[in-house]
Length: 346
Image (cartoon, rainbow, N blue to C red):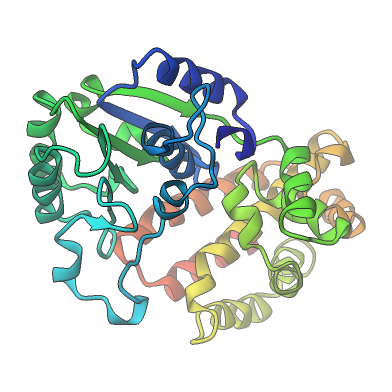
């Protein structure tokens, strides 16, 4: 049910109109930041078609059909086999399938399998639905295979491309799909959702909501206790760079960020570093504490803002963004972290 989803009220209204007028496109791109609910919106569109109790463009959310639509089973992370990802995954409903990436790439065989299934008539419903998660991870071969289907879409099949980077899709794919753009969810709505639906404590919900940058998915995934521990470590990097120029401490922290227990959290630690630097920069420029995300360490951030060179802060953020982009080509993270920290202390 769209009414149960958080934020993006304008998108909900548009989808309700499209469904009510039987004008849902066969090919649709759902674009927006990670975790804002794009996939769940796609599922709800499918539910509105398949639910026998649908009313006013909304599924009931309670019947047997609604409950089994999004029950997909994917291979366990530790048992990834490339061949398993050369197909469309179907869950509890045979007319709703999804394609997911294998090691950062959507395989061409999966798109070809989608093409094959899309040409079948629906089994139980009046339409079939196929969701391509992280569609920007299609390589040229997979993109061209999908293009064949989009050029002559089967009338009873709908293909939804979920992406946070729509510009990475081929222009020819974008031109054949209608695009829905999703905005970040308002912080107060994220906080309310965490308290009411996820049973967060108020203080933890407030911090998680500010850190989420409008992403419900990111907010839900934040363990506030673990976050604060990780943030203390990263905050010491900034203190060493701005106040003490203590490279030894920074190299030690870089080592910790890349050890066995932290290596899977490297990118989230990078997010924490970026958030703290942005807070310091905001305080340096305006002194406005209302813009601070990490409000529970505001006093530390004020002292850092007072000592920081204003010109350094945006350049550090730019370097972090460059590092983030380079992670996609498997750079040595320890060397990259050392280089970043040397630059910050320089």
